[in-house]
Length: 102
Image (cartoon, rainbow, N blue to C red; front, top):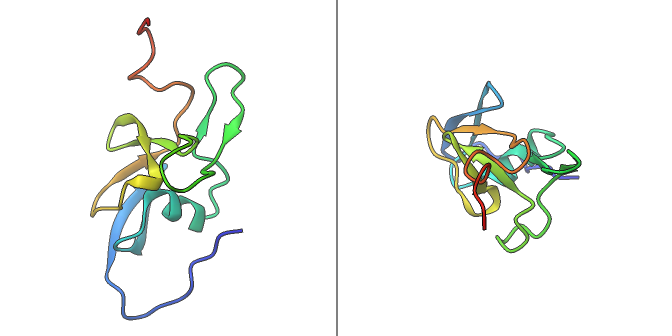
């Protein structure tokens, strides 16, 4: 579905995706990074636990939210990878929303 074309002259950074250290092209979004690693989803829904993945790739739909550097509900499609970044699948609403009432 998503495949990055090979390139040899691009700068790379190391990030950790779900506990695994990988090298990726600097300037990629987190969403593009996880999709290029054959990650099938970026979050699960709070009610049913359904798996969701990036859809619009431009920050509108919020289906791409992940836990980035320990902070939940970060839009993976609008966040660029940085050296040492910690990226994890988000389970449910994320800790920033649990227990908050409207």
